Image (cartoon, rainbow, N blue to C red; front, top):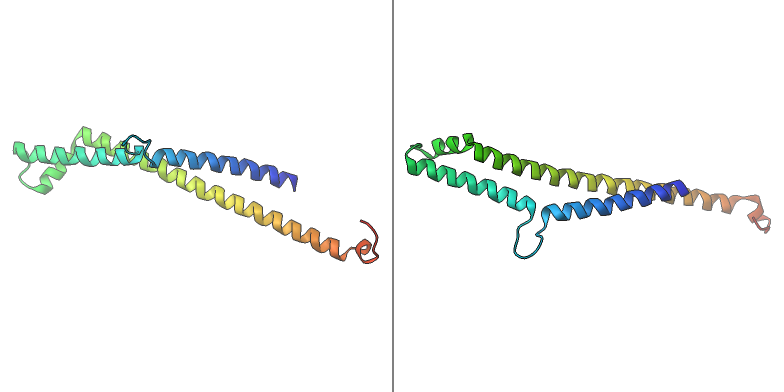
Length: 135
């Protein structure tokens, strides 16, 4: 059982670290600043919208669909989208790690509870208990 307790403590510490990492990615650092994930998404959407408007204003695109294609082909939009997808991937990976760590903790708690129940049953059915002797 001490091994389970030590493993549980390690998992619990890693869970706390993962939650802290997740908070950094998805919450505002304060002072009216957006979270890194929100900023990456907003930067992408803004850059894409500006590029579409620019394509329409310059006459490069005769339709909204053409402006969309021009924006999607832009190196700037590519990089902004890559940054956004990378940030979303980090957020998703962090979220999945948190869920996995919670499952591991739950499994460990179940194992400890099961062992405790076995010990209890063993104590109640042992001959020394029935005879009134100390164990």
